[in-house]
Image (cartoon, rainbow, N blue to C red; front, side, top):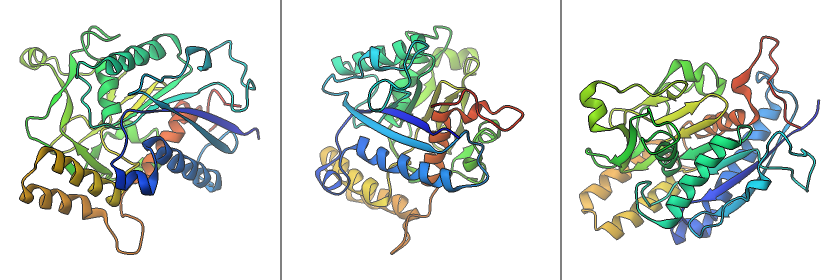
Length: 317
């Protein structure tokens, strides 16, 4: 079978704190490692429908600095799949960030416009977002000013404060049915660190208009966050949480955020306890990060379009 080559453009929407950067590099580098590891696991598995072994190449872009993929590098119906050393870009991945998707900053406006352009004009390119990435996708595509004007969703600061660490997320069965790795994650447990949420507008709540516009789907909910991710078949996937973070990364970032915002010591201690719920001394964290990474990779290769004979459509080459 032919190899499925996935070219991912990872848009860095922030840089890690120094202690994390020293150990793990940029967020785009962390995603590259985890997606390549996920590809190896899926290639070795016998229970995943595939058209051939998966290989992943990640190209990083500095979104904060205004560096975004040129549109001519994105896959479209005229793309030559063999052009260049790694071929056209098949997927756009937007990392987490300490910024908010509703901030009035030039690079955030530029990124939202880029997301809208990709979604509207490049249907062969998948879009994935983590935390801030999830939120800016919602702001770009589901707000009244986005490409779905009938939608009534937006991003705002959470009235309940930060959701931190490992919290049980109940996934939507209609979503997990499409991604076998997540069917075993009940509840779903990946690291969380966010103070903003995707919610219906107050006017929509008052009118009782709280359903996502078809074919969008909420992937799941936690006690503190009703929308833990978004899914649009074959087009968009987003997690509020961070499968790319482990206890080390999340604890270092939390302490740095606390230092900047002067969080009370009691809050920092409570957040640390929540982050360390998945920590196992001397071993990998006990969470669902691997399953989450595998689901993202299966989304990139199109496994959410499984046909009756078990093959994925369309195959990538």
